[in-house]
Length: 203
Image 1: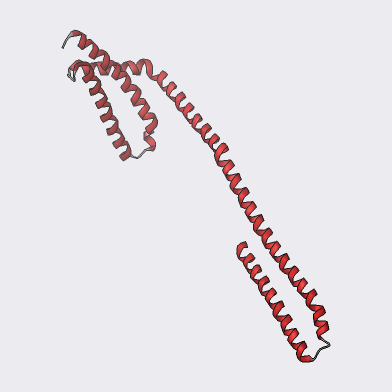
Image 2: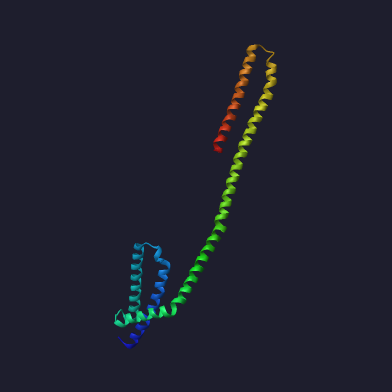
């Protein structure tokens, strides 16, 4: 392995050490280990170390085709130490700022979605529901009024007829009374049906 390749390998591993420090702090920040179950932390730790190991091997393969030497681990340690000493405090501040901005952006978008979509749809549905209820009640009221009017007209029409029929023999008057009862019973039957239907709709 040439000197240039060794130098590039050292720089790459130092960079990976810096990246490892940043990734580890990011992982710890989102994991919140004290609040997590040990089993979950165990599996996530394994996944983290496996992924970082693959990343180191990939970068090493790109630089020197995957040759492993002792100075590679020293370079990783130097990069991680440099991160801890020089960049950790600054990176954590930047990370917290980014998390804060991401949360605020999410809440803003959620509020906009609620105001622009959920609220108008809710108002529209309530308006349609109110119109349907109003239309139903109006139709029921109109049906009751028509039936009442028909009953009144029937009484007005048949009252003079019954008066005239009273001068006729009792047998004819009895037939007229029976006919009047049948007509009135028919209208009352329809009225009761409408009232029952209205009561069922109200429930």
